[in-house]
Image (cartoon, rainbow, N blue to C red; front, top):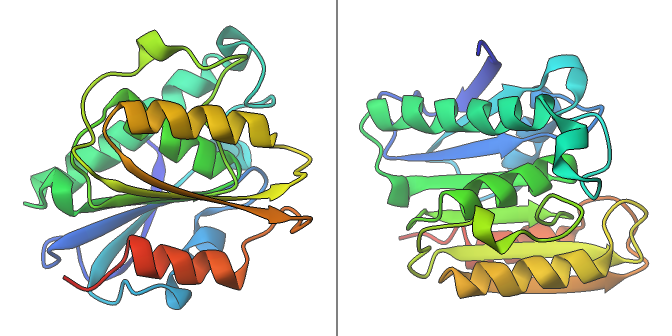
Length: 206
């Protein structure tokens, strides 16, 4: 798996914290990296994998999982490889953070829920767990209080609020400290309020 990776911020071998930034469908690593300038991540290594053909999986995140294969499994493996590379630079899981928008938010939630552990935090700008339903048996581990922020619009053309609520319940069951905020008619975008909450809840100075 040779996923292209774009990095920014503090070099990985010098950083104590790392943020994995996962772009949405049709976008790219540079697009999601541009969000970092609005976040309290000045002392982070920023790591943004680039999806092949600018999409992590071909269809909606709500179709049966097998319809998005093999791209879906390849994308999960790509994120896993990024985590391994970060750990090889001496950064512990509890100092690894995840952020995604839309398709990238879905992938961030799906990967961390399948590999629940005490991470630095997870920010999902408009996303939910992936599949035609939430398959509880796919998710293991314990988040041990990892802060997770999910923001979304009601309605959102791609991400139904019902799936966001189901995802919140599953993440809490795995021990995450979840904050969800639903914005009326926000549209498929990232709002300033979401950025402010991500900074307050996840990217707090420690």
